[in-house]
Image (cartoon, rainbow, N blue to C red; front, side, top):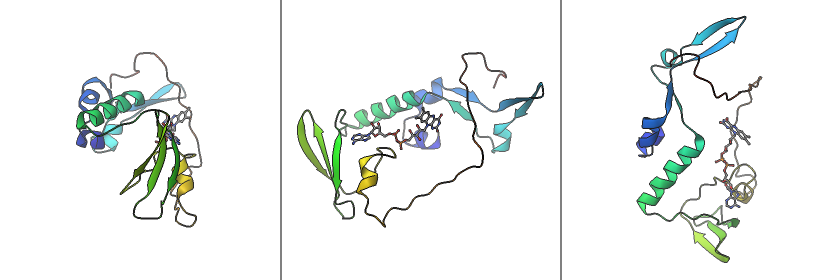
Length: 146
Ligand SMILES: Cc1cc2nc3c(=O)[nH]c(=O)nc-3n(C[C@H](O)[C@H](O)[C@H](O)COP(=O)(O)OP(=O)(O)OC[C@H]3O[C@@H](n4cnc5c(N)ncnc54)[C@H](O)[C@@H]3O)c2cc1C
């Protein structure tokens, strides 16, 4: 929320999202309220669909006037270890290149950019928890008002 507000992409999110200050875990036929807001210095959970965030970010980018290309698959990235990395992509059936100052590889774990990073330069950061959880999305009223 802080990052989206700072970038000017939270106007609709602030208006339309569903605010949660806590959750209720059910155990042994009793509800156990976890007051997230009290436990985190007043922070809240904002329920707002991921796809809506994408729409808001696209609108912001278009309003800024910077080019935003859809249907432009990247075929290769070269020079990832130089000052001027180059993105090779196709758009409207034409092969194009984009020479960059910086390159952010946001093409997912199996994307091309990860493979373009030279061996030895790649550092990964991760945390593996000793448990997993399973969420079920239900179209029902919230168990508590907030
Ligand atoms: C079924 C499912 C449910 C999930 N649920 C949750 C959840 O509830 N909460 C949670 O936090 N995480 C969840 N995740 C994980 C979360 O979706 C991923 O961790 C997150 O999307 C990764 O973001 P990303 O931006 O790194 O990559 P991605 O979201 O994978 O985005 C990569 C983008 O790059 C594009 N791309 C890839 N290659 C190219 C190319 N060569 N040229 C052009 N474009 C390219 C792809 O089309 C895609 O749009 C879920 C994942 C799945 C599969």
